[in-house]
Length: 343
Image 1 (spheres, helix red, strand yellow):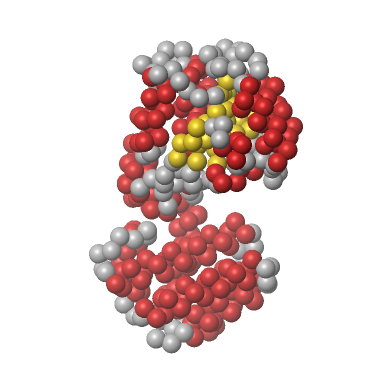
Image 2 (spheres, rainbow, N blue to C red):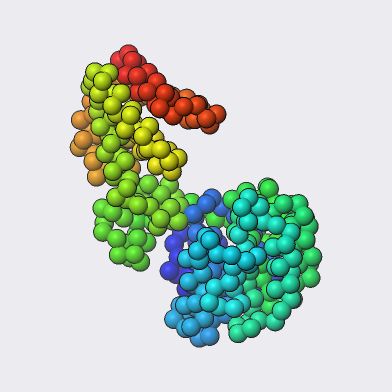
């Protein structure tokens, strides 16, 4: 049911009205930032169109069809085939093959939408990252958008509407999705995922409006990275000796994988922002509220000038990493330059 989804009241109301009037378009674009719930809303619409025991116009969330369609939300990223089919034969996902959605995938969509539903009332194909269709695929999809039978529905998910072909945009109804508030995400995690209050609050703050990010966060890993970076920041604030700073740089640069190193850098940046907010207002809302006392102590000895320069140094490091400089050398230089910034 749409009531179990959070935020985006306008999008929810539009979809309900379509179902009430029995005028769900054959082609929809769900546009918004990554992780704001576009896929969950698309699957909810697919359930409503195929539910065996609907509650009004909405899905019951209990029948076999609803349960099987919902499981498609957790489909493996390694699933093979031009279209990923779940346990329900009438609802499928299209994902980019490596970098792009290919013309073969677009033709498979055309072929599948021409079949009558196998077990439900509608065939629904959700195209993830639809803006990654190459020109051939986009042109091949046009025929489907123009000629699909009434029982077929395509839902294109995108973060970049402008990257879709104008001819595709003109044939689809656009529904926009906005980022969620931290409060909405926190309430959802507590109510539906049984997260403890402190855990839910931290995940909601880190999610930056994206429910998908909140659900996928590994908070234990984040805290480990954060603790290491807080030690670095405390050494910088106290102007510790260079040996200690270089040891901290070694710990950071030894995170060899990009998916470990960059989150550590993100954690350092977040800590600086939080400490700066507390320096300006001890009651300010911060991301890392669970370590507020430690950050407050740190912020007392740091000037606005140093906070500004620290953040600029991190941005400079990111620019260097983008052109593949040696990570160890760049990290050493970062921390030494941050330590050298005058009060």
